[in-house]
Structure formats: C-alpha cells, structure tokens
Image: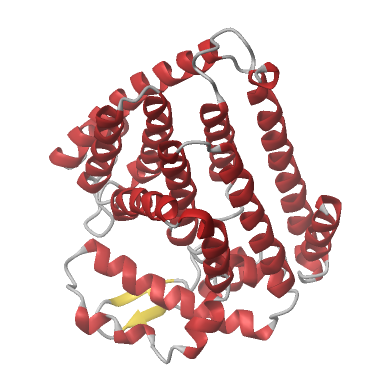
Length: 358
C-alpha cells in the first residue's frame, strides 16, 4: 500500500504538472520521500528509549519551554522588544510579531507533549498549567490559531474519551466529511465578500479570516477544473501567483495574490495537487493513524492528551501550514515520534527500552 501511494505521488509530481515544471515536481517528491524516511527512522528509534531517556527528554523540553514562553510573553506585551533588539524585526499591525508564530505553534505542541509525561506522573494540575500558559503566550502575540486551537484541542481530547467505544467510528466518519471540504465550500452559496461587513476592519484576525475566505474560494475553483488527479505536487506555488490577479475586497481593500504559496488548508491543498485520489489516500492514512494511536493509549488521561496533539496538528494543517513545508513536516515527524514514545513508556521500568518491556 505504501509503495502504491508513493507511486501515485510520483505520477502526480510529473504528469500533473506542465512539462516545464516537471523538475520542480520531481524535486518535491524526493523531498517528501526523504522526510517520510526521517519519520520512519524516528518511529523505529523511539522504541529503544528507556524511561530514563524519556525523563531526560521531558526535562529538557520543560527548560526550553520556559525559556521560549518567557520570550513570547515579553515580546507579546512589549510589541516585539526583544526581537527588535536582537534581530531588528518590526511589528506589523495586521499580523503582530509574525516571526514568532511558528515558535508559538511548536510551543503549544510541546506543552501537550509535556502534558502526556506529567499525566503519567499524575501531575494533572501542572500539565494544565503548561498547556494554558502556552495558549496565553500564543494569544499575546496574536497567534490565535495556536491559542484557541490548544483549548479546543483539549476539549476534543475529552470529547473523544467521552464517546466511549464508538469514538473511533465517530471520528472516522467526521474525517470523511471533513475531507469533502471543497464540496461544502462550492455548494455553500457564501461568497468571500460576505464576511467583511460582519468583521472589524481594524482587527488583524478579521484580515486573516477574509483573506483565507478568498484563498479557499479561488482554490476550490481550481480544484473543480481537475478534480480527479489534481494539478500535481507543488502546484499551489504556481497557480495562484500575481499573474492570476490580486485579491481585492470592497471593505478590506487589496490583499495580494490568490494563493500565497499554499492554500492555508491541508485538505484543499491535497485536493488541489493530488485530486480525489490523493484525498482518499490521505483520509485513509489519517484514520489508520487514529486507530493505531487509540491502541497504545491505555488510560483515559493519556488518551485525552495524546488526541489533543492529533487535533492540534489538524488545526495547524487546516489554518496555517503547507503539507509540503520541509521544516513543518520534519517538526510533525518529531512530535509524532515523541508522542508515541511518551505514551508507550512505562515509567516504572527506568532502564528497559520500550521494545523490551512487557
């Protein structure tokens, strides 16, 4: 199955693109394969980690978390003082200290990883403090998807646990409906211009909402032109450039190109580049991952925090980052490997690697 999927992605990287972009497609597929190999290696290595190793990793993450949290809070309340002092970054009214938003994304994910470790130690209050302090720091720099996404992800984790035996089936069906997002957008009858009158023009979040509405609307139009196989890997970077025009809203004015590097939604990007076939495989892989994760989470609280990480990744993928971003894909691989390691580790057997524990 894996070879078949990689074969299809390779075909999409070459035939789905115009001839002059074939080199870009081939380069993208080799980059994707390389990152997948990194992920497979990490998943193999994490089985050799002992409880002492996990404790050392968790302690190091806590130290780094506190340092990063302090930086974000200071920059958030002072308008980017530290970043301006050391890197000469200047604050943007619409996006805030945008250079720290990737940091806030990693910070909230790390807070959930630390939460898994602390929950295993029954330190529930401390785990909650780490999570909500990360959310507050993200909010202070206007990284709303990270701030509110973390809270919603924890709520999803508790909801997932509350579903009982039906949880995997319910989430799987929900994912199938979610992967039909292009259909829901196309048939909604809502135009991007409809959002502006209901939002405050002076809020940076309003700017992001309206711009994304235009991006997603343009992306869905392109998907409808090649719905089965898509436009090919990397097509997001060439379809919505300035040559396609500039987005202009009657209230917010000019935004920019129709697709700024990627659609800011992983489901739409998968449909755009790989079509219906790619969306089917992606949905199947995510559902399979849910079943595997549920299998190794043997207690309610571990299940809550582990699935909060899953939901947080879905939030970032569907509002912020590209599915082909090298740094983000590598970060996700590391987060997933550590999630599995933290979840499976038995802290009562400190010197025995996980693959040798009963």
